[in-house]
Image (cartoon, rainbow, N blue to C red; front, side, top):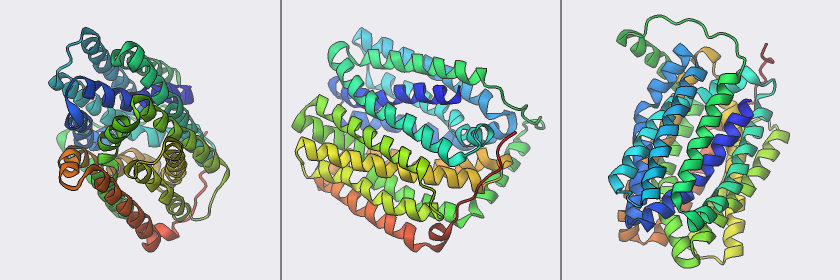
Length: 393
C-alpha cells in the first residue's frame, strides 16, 4: 500500500515539471515566471519543513502525510480549473504553488521514518521506491508533454490532484503500530523538539558536511537547471524534446535504483559520490547544444547517477539516526538540502542574462564535479560505513 501511494503520487509529480515549464511560458510569463512559480513552492517548503519534522515525531507521520495530500488535492484542482478557464495569472500560479509547498513540508519528513517501519531491508526498499520514482520520471514528462500539447496543462494538474487523493487513501489503509502519545504541543515543547533535532543533526559531521555542499548545488546547479535548461532545450528542439529528455533521465533513474537494490557498498556515501559525478552530464549536454540522441544519453546517465546517490544517502540517514528523532533530523537535512534551490531559481534568469544561459549551466557542471570531490575528501563522509537494522515487528 505504501509503495502504491508513493508510486501514484510520484507519477503525478513527474508530470508537473514539464507542465509548469510549458504552462507558465505559454501564459506569457517567460523563464522568469517559471523560476518564480518554482521558487514559490520551495520557499514555504524550506520555511516550514522543520515544523513538519517536529509534528511528524509528535503526532505520527501518517496523519500528517494524509492531511498534506488532501491540501494538495485542493491546490492542484484550483490550478487546473484556472488553466482550463484560460485565465491563469502569475499570482494565482505562484499562490497555489506556495500552498502546495507548505503541504509538502508537512509530508516530506515522514517519508524517512515510514520506511524502517515497513521494510526489513531498508536499502532494498529505498531502491524500490527510487525505481518507482524513476518510472514516474520516465512516463510522467513524456505523458505530460503530450497532454499539454493535446489538451493543455490543466489536464496534468487535474491528474496530479487525483494522484494525491489515491495516496491519501492508501496511507490511511496502512496497518502500523500505534504512535506513542506525546505531551501537549506547547511553544516550549516545540522549541525543545527543534533543539533536540538540531543537536542530533549537528552531532553527525558526515550529514552536515553533505548539506553544506548541497546548498552550493542548489544555488548554482539544481536551481537554474529547470528554468534555464527547459528554455534552452525547447527553444532549440521543441517542447516534446524536453519531455523526452526528462523521460530519458527517468529511464536512467530506473537503472540506478535497480543497481542500488543489488549493490551494497561498505562505504555507501563514498560509492555514491563516485557515481554522482555522472549527473553533470545533464547540464553539460544542455549547455553544449548536443544533438538529441547525445542529450538523451546525458540525461539517462545523470538519472542513473542521481538515483544511486539518493538511495545511498537515504539509507545512511535512516540507519544511522535513532527512530524517535528520525523525522526531525530528516527535516533538518531536507531543509538544508533544498535551501539553495529557490535562491538559484530566482537568480537563474538574471544570472543567465549576465553570464549567458550556457555558461551558467557550465558553471553548474564545475560546481557539481567539485562537490563530488569534496565528498570524497571529507573523512566523515568517505569513511561512513553501512549499517543493517533489525527487521521491524
